[in-house]
Image 1 (spheres, rainbow, N blue to C red):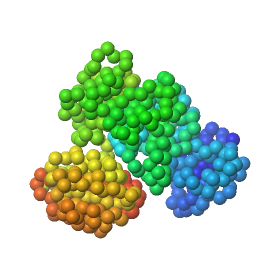
Image 2 (spheres, rainbow, N blue to C red):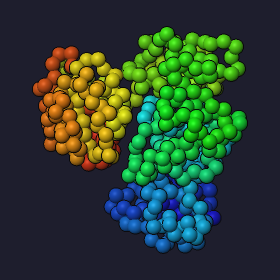
Image 3 (cartoon, rainbow, N blue to C red):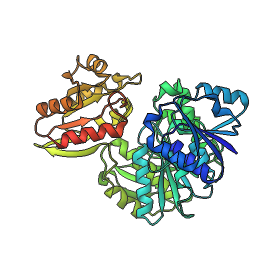
Image 4 (tube, rainbow, N blue to C red):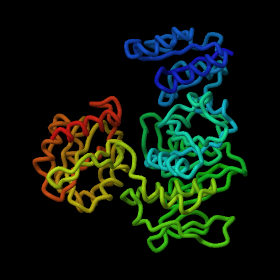
Length: 445
């Protein structure tokens, strides 16, 4: 079989290696210059994989039986249009990799915000409770990289983006989780409806033995949009008949096979702050209960787990001021949760590359909790123009300047909170790079 792979980033390389090992004839096409991929080119040469860089030519379609696309490659590029006319099937790396490990149980997590925390937390609970699991998808490894390196009893816990879900065909998780759905990545999906459809595609192939876990408090994540044969469980900060929920400050669970409600823990005992982490914890706990992990194990893990890098990550305390790295907050909704997580006065560093950001959603939180705003990046002007009428606001021309300004303005008991509400691609390679730079500067103060 002849396979064309579009994109030479991590997922594309994983598919190329797997397909080559399985005996397929592989051609890889990347629109960016070869200067960006010296290590990948050496690997392709070693494996005998044909490739092109600097554009997707008609070579992609020569004797092509299947196209596997990397996440984030625009769905309307010319080579895809030609492939559609020729009847060539296009699938995602996710679909391709999963087809080689169909018997491993799979928990798939998506949503606009909270994916990384919830995925990492589920993996943490499973491994601490004696159920071996592996991270995959957006964190850990592409599923294609796990194929020859996973035991039969290991559960795959995969964080999935709307990009990855946009090109699935038969992909089916045993447990699917949709944490929330708010407008994001509209430059790719064009409309919010398309974006939401991509998220809910996670459950479209589920059968009656599978489970879909939804946020009962998110109107755009409701059962009304679910197209699944799987059983639906929900989580909420309000009591439910079926799922995990908050009741009198406690995390409680009631599932169809249970005779009575059970208490897991007090929410105040959790190691992570904020209402958004309460939602993440309930989703993770529900996945754990599906796999019959005991309440005591779930409680102990939720008490011990302190979060993931770049998500409300405490960098240091200097002169009684906490410096928090929330670089993963790449949209307004994520920043809403961050600003609502602290009761101390906040020096807020915000900005980057916008995505039709609606900052009015943050107005009430800014009035209540924020004492100073420092705006950076391409969105600095938009942030300044929106907030300067209601809050002291300044612009900075670099991350270092922003942090130095924050240090000057912070008083004992304040929080310097870097929660950008924007993408990172104006100044940085990705949100991880942005967070690392923030931490490096803060630690050098």
